[in-house]
Amino acid sequence: MTDIWDEDHRPLSEEDRQKILSRVHSLLFWLGKLIPEEELLEGESIPLREVVFRFIMKENPSPEDVQGATDLANALEAKAKNLEKQLHDGQLTKGEAHMLLDEICGLLRAVDDIRKSKGASASLMAKTVMNRVQDERRWLDFVKNVT
Image (cartoon, rainbow, N blue to C red; front, top):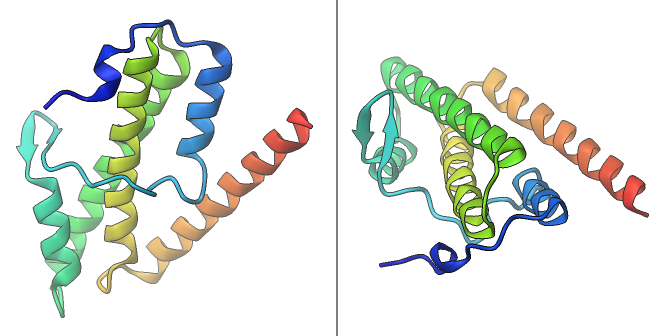
């Protein structure tokens, strides 16, 4: 199945780039986005959607499960930041930019689901909340600069 964005080969304008980047930093970034079925991390294909689902559905995850999920969330977050840098700095078409947005939001949704699950530690939850506060501050600064 082809993505509708595969067809859009128009150059990405700076205004479009900023709109797309603001979507990544919005509180509702995940709206309508699915966790990717599979993801390539460190050269290994991971059935990401299934792994995240199994972790969040566990009643009492072991400390090893929690550590593994935390490591996975950290790796996904690092990959999302790398993709965001490509989105910020790369010479992209509109289609490529929207496909990057979809991937970034899917990865961040997986990170969010993992960190909000029963097995996540309080410190990870606090870090997530602080990141959201910082995101909202950036968003408010952006709105102030635009108006």
